[in-house]
Length: 232
Image (cartoon, rainbow, N blue to C red):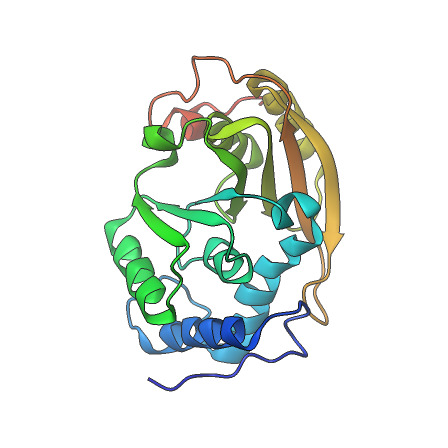
């Protein structure tokens, strides 16, 4: 397996030589593994669309100081895998419901020696071990925002943070998400516009803070958040 170099012109964060080597292995695995669960596998594109986009969250202090991070619907490992490499002091849980994707994540963690990441084969609603244990929950291209918030809120400690990757801002969708947040003990803190790579447009990080306990009726049973979204 060829090790691809990580372009410092694209990755706009400071990384050690060891971290760059780890991310290079991640890129090589995306390229070489036929079961990689992403359509973006060519290294230069993956550097932009996966690595740089994931690492844009390092602009947020709440991400940089987090001790425990959970990535919901981790898929090919983004943003969680990239954040685990960049933040070796954090414990990162890669939560994924599909077994084959979990097997891919395990292979990448082993090959890239990402020792602070662990793969959790579970639906977000069923991950009881994670209840109220995380400082930050992240999600990227997972579901409508009210659904993401319902998945995330029970997994956060009070004072913890949800960071949800989104594209173009749509007022009606944000209003629905704010109504959902109010039911879950969350409050929108900010929407941070980011430009993870040259030419990137409409990239936003939606940041919610958990101000109070999530009501005990959450999480609802598996599938209900998508079937009957809060706030809509």
